[in-house]
Length: 193
Image 1 (tube, rainbow, N blue to C red):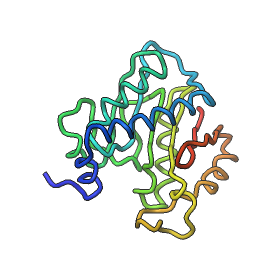
Image 2: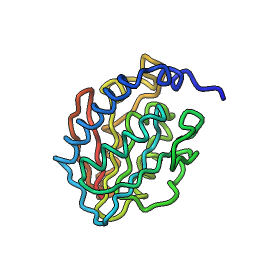
Image 3: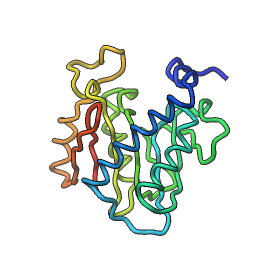
Image 4: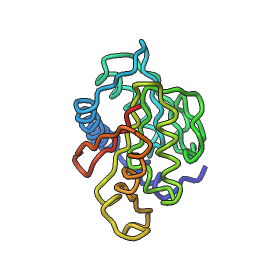
């Protein structure tokens, strides 16, 4: 198994560092749910996580969503490569520029994902995250400020820029409801179905 440089970096992080990063995600999601509560109903909340940097985040995602929503959750993680997630349950090798399988979901969640996807395909990911939702569901996309604050096609780190305001302008004529929520390192764009 050969991991990408990005996944190798995460594999080298201590459990304490992964927990610290998971706690930051939890704080972001708490702020998001305070501004945009989940309105879909069901005894179990179905969550589709789109991309994950490390297998240890899989159990953290389950814990975080369950604690914040006060319900049992069923988390499915989609990633274009899955070698770095081996040993975890409910992992699906999937290109998120294609429609998500196994829906509908109450929540789709992408944490700093779009910068890894060519700019011309990012809109497809956003629409797929929205289309996979139940009525009342939330598509949550978290961005670092460098993701949407960089002019030009590429960010300084070589990843792709995210023209967030362009995507918001494309949603308006489609009558898609969305909310921007400030988070520690940037903002979240939450699409409400």
